Length: 215
Image (cartoon, rainbow, N blue to C red; front, side, top):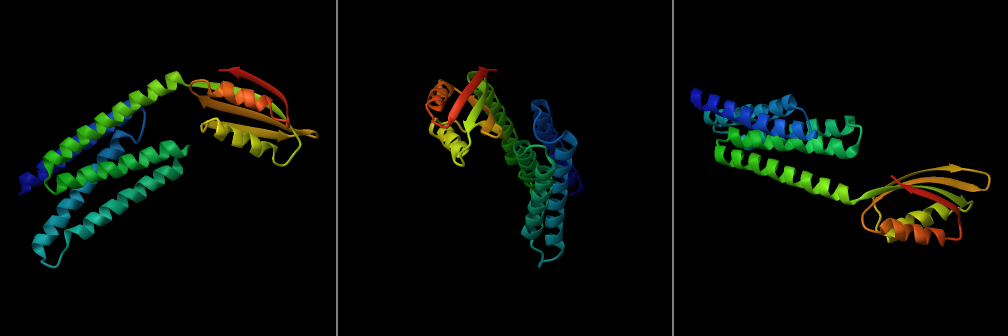
């Protein structure tokens, strides 16, 4: 029995470390040590739940496992809160939550499943990384300085135009002047969406001047 517990801890450590190294190399998610601790800790508590079931007939292992999942989710949510951007924080949180699931599988003795899921997740994440790189290579970033007349709905009309042109990835800041607004806009697009946006932008009656350059 002691050997089996030790085997579970070692396997959980290896899988957690493998998952952590993959995320560390990619520059995404949490560090190796955090993923290692979450994975190993989940295995330890899963083993504890099984041992308590053997000692007491009234004990239900699913209760402790449910608490492990909730605990991992809380750790992940704290990573989201402390992160500088929501996207990176969400990735960190889900990484920790997933590593907890792998640890639970090992603790329950589902070794093959834990190994295959770890390898599958790493492969899928790497595939998505390559797709993301290819997408970014095809997209281009364009910056605009737009002088807009002073009208309440002028800015919302430009935002509506962005949606109509299929542009969802954009950032903007505006400054209020005596005659209207100075809008600083950056958009990331693929194809000729930016050309279409520029063309329609120039046709807007509230737009007095447009300056743009491809970055």
